[in-house]
Length: 123
Image (cartoon, rainbow, N blue to C red; front, top):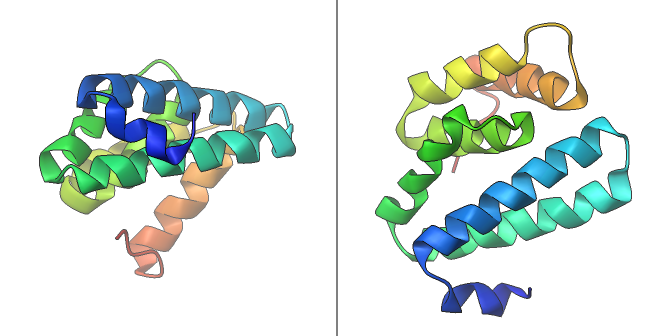
């Protein structure tokens, strides 16, 4: 789907597409399939942009994914949650950052460290 196609979906459907894209991104990243992971990154990012256009209530729906079974989805949800529920987002990043580390876990550890130092400021 192209970014313009997201506009025709309900927020519920968009959240599901976001879950699918972020889960796939995490799995591909851990498998070191970076080219395919980058495509899923772009897809997830464009869905997030569409959710932002729908207002804070739509973006906050991403917090429902903080307990998703997929580490990649939890990582993306935690990044978004740092904006409006920082304690929850930081908790999930810390959980993902515990050994054994995956690429998603390493990203979580680095993000958490940068966020705590003030170098990473969620939009």
